[in-house]
Image 1 (cartoon, rainbow, N blue to C red):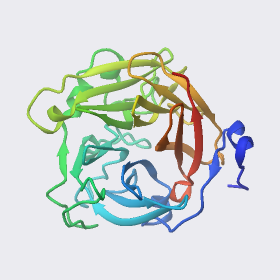
Image 2 (cartoon, one colour):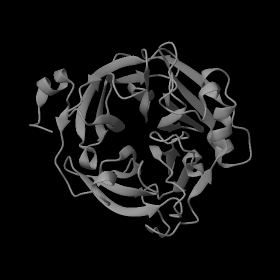
Image 3 (tube, rainbow, N blue to C red):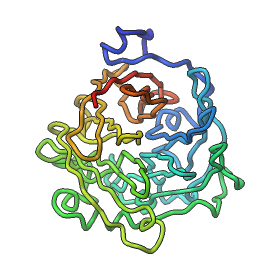
Length: 317
């Protein structure tokens, strides 16, 4: 990765400030390089989960002294050889953690795996951010809820989203593929890496109770001007909206962080430079928020244990 860049020079270069290398996440090197989303409960120290796009599990971790400290592993689907859930996003809201399957075909061979078309939710203690039930790396806990209702909402969406639902990621504008997740109140927001059309990236919002209950989803689609062939790599809820980690639909292109107030056009806060040609910005974690700044952590797909780098982002009201 090279030497760390610090202070104003790091911010200006788009490289951020490198965090300390901590204990390793579980699994082989490929799994340790596959962190594709993360979310933290607002407790001290932060209690967090990681979305792993190469695994049928999630792993808990904490943050302390600018270090990620991995904890227990929890199965989210059965390990039956029928494909992993390809979890690409994570979120926390009101005592629940959420994990998001990609809702797309596999990238390399365009295969369909039913477990990729699920949204997961499980409760935690609001004071500790930890499950009150027993967890296991091999046995599924009954407290983990799973919903497949988002799949139909995507397939029946009007326009470009429905047109590219369950199509290969590498074709034309990019088949529908989710990589961002945020929950605000009773609404769940998912961000599409693809498709991208006419410089627009897409977010779909649905009702949380409808997703995990029996009511309607009340879907709403947002088309955001982020640039040609740019999609959404992650979402993170803040008190005044959502932060968007934007990046290329395919392999090559710029990465940036935007602030979106759910009403107006997104405001670009930071262009990102990749610390290594073989890594891609994949995860955005909010560490803190002041009157006009956010402290965020970016994790990278392809970097061991996420290769975290910190940024301070200023914004205008």
